[in-house]
Image (cartoon, rainbow, N blue to C red; front, side):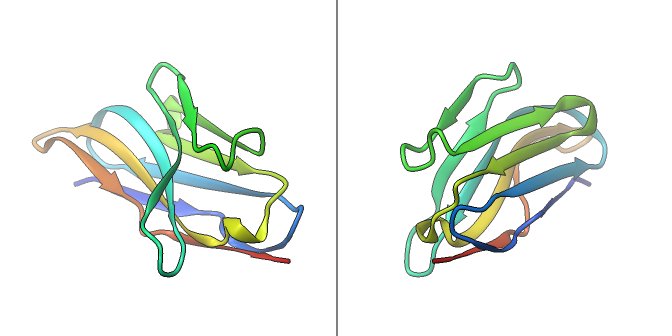
Length: 120
C-alpha cells in the first residue's frame, strides 16, 4: 500500500515564503513524475509545477521565477519552495506522484492537500 502525505502549508503575508513537502511511503519500486497542483475556491485544479525523474522541470506561467520544485529520490519526496507569495496564490495545494509499487503496478497518487493562505 502506498501513502502520499503533503505538509508545509500555512498563513503568510504577501511577499513571504513557504516550503511544501510531499513524502511517499510503502512498497515503492520507482517514482516517475512528481508534481504540485492547486485549487482555489470556485476554480478548477491547476498544475503549478512538475519534475521528471531526471530532474526536468516545468512551471505554470503564473509562478515562474517565484516557485522552485525539487525532489529527493532517496527520500521519495518532492518539495515546492514558494517565494514572493501573492494573494492569488491562496489555494489548497496537492502533491501528485506517479508511483510503481510491489503488487500494485503503477498509478498516480495524490496527497491529502495542504492549505496555503496569503494575506494581502
